[in-house]
Length: 451
Ligand code: SF4
Image 1 (spheres, rainbow, N blue to C red):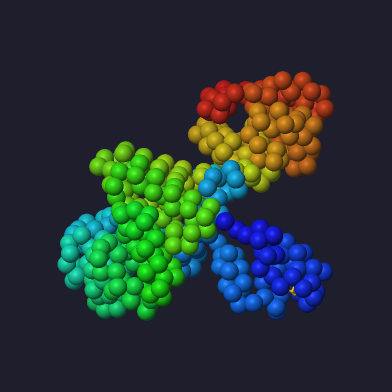
Image 2 (cartoon, rainbow, N blue to C red):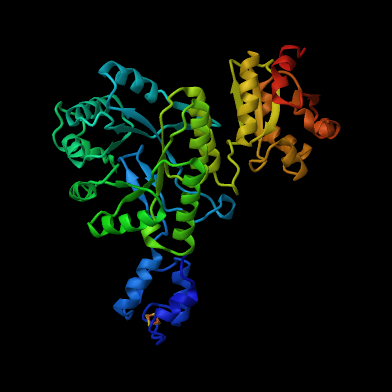
């Protein structure tokens, strides 16, 4: 837990010398607690206090980065147990397991499918983040060949999972085919599955790579991360060995709570899990449970779109800011090849509302305008109840965007749920108001029959 201003004050010299630019040590401590100033502004802090203060100012869960560039996966740095307290910052990575037992053609086919796991939802791209190559064969040459092949087939981040540090070393140092980007430069996550921890520590340290350690429970994890850190590796991920789903979630919650509330550094690292459920439905339920509580990386086996998409959608929702609804820009959107006779539909700028309406208009095959009013990202009924989607607001929006110059008619279609405002809107806007369906699913039929 972060130190309070008073905790910090106790560690300062308390001379009120003003060298830091603050009138008193207490004022400086308060500013430091709010992260408005850095500790080095006080030149008089004794080294023991400095160590304590610097360590307390570190985030409770360390930031670990896999990969490089825009598609890199950042994990950790979370500050709360529950999303409503603030928000979760770094969306959990979703990785796909590829075993080195597969044949070359099976790997090619699988990678083609994995690369296609990229979707658009409510105006945002959502996709899987990583391919985890597992040395299930136990054969070093086979593992290295599979790893080389996969690296050439995907731009996704990579993880290398093995019992053997030697097998990992073979991949990252002795690639057999010339790779576009050498393995180390892609910053793969090394996953130590077993007992060769010293070898893994050496490899991660020498190559400045993140290292995931496999542990049975939080006690073992604390001891192992201490050892890895003392070995010179800073970026550590805790992989809790697959037991029951409930057991893993219990361990994850305990680790997260201990790191955040007790500021217990040995457990202050991102968490990861491999799914173990035997059927596709059970596996997705398991993966979703880990995303909710508190995995920063989940490695799954299933690559079918109908299973992966719900997982990505869950992650997208959980990692949105609960205090800021996802919004689209308030403006007039054209769906299809609109003309002067196209219908004009009115709705709010809540992202899900807009994309649902837009999807149904597209399905109707009736080119239409959608006017999105600025409702501060609220859905139709919520915005209406909060007076953010009123007759006055709609009139103002229609005028602002010059809708009368876009069409040769004077008819607006409003959502069925706010039919109550049709009289007033007609009066103040001079447009004829038609009441559309309550649910977006009724839009195609409505538009096709609109005279
Ligand atoms: Fe206190 Fe240090 Fe600021 Fe002086 S420089 S007032 S000792 S915090």
